[in-house]
Image (tube, rainbow, N blue to C red; front, side, top):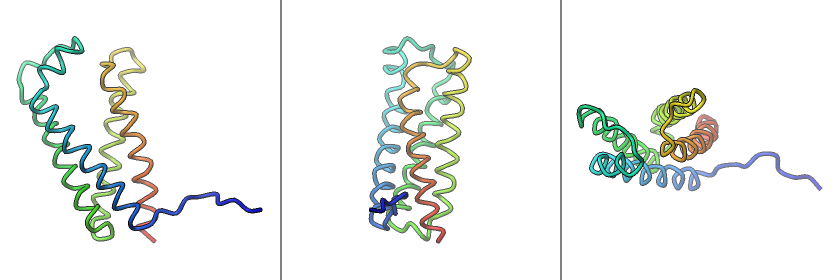
Amino acid sequence: MRYATRIELTSKTIKTIFGIAAAYDIVLGIVFGLFYRTIYDRFGATLPNHAGYVQLPALFIVVFGIGFWMVARDPKSNIGIVTLGILMKLSFCAVVFGHLLFGKSLPFFVPFAVIDLLFALVFARAYVELAK
């Protein structure tokens, strides 16, 4: 008996994945942008000296969420956003895991980095399917 060695992502699956990523990033960005003080206090983190240092990245996350929503609507036409999404997710992972390696990471970022690593891997797989 032969077993499939790779999972084929259908257009519907890709749309679903990016729909989930869109909702995740939009909600995450809004929550961090609006409630960063509460989040930082809860985890004992030092607040930056200006709200913009948290709010701007939070809005960038919302913008990426909107990009992922665009991919969910029309994956083939928005393959460039998939590339940027992979790079964004891997960039966050590199920062969090890099700081973790040197003992300087805030622990509350680690679960988000793990989720983003999973998203990056699935996005890369989706890219391969879309590029065919």
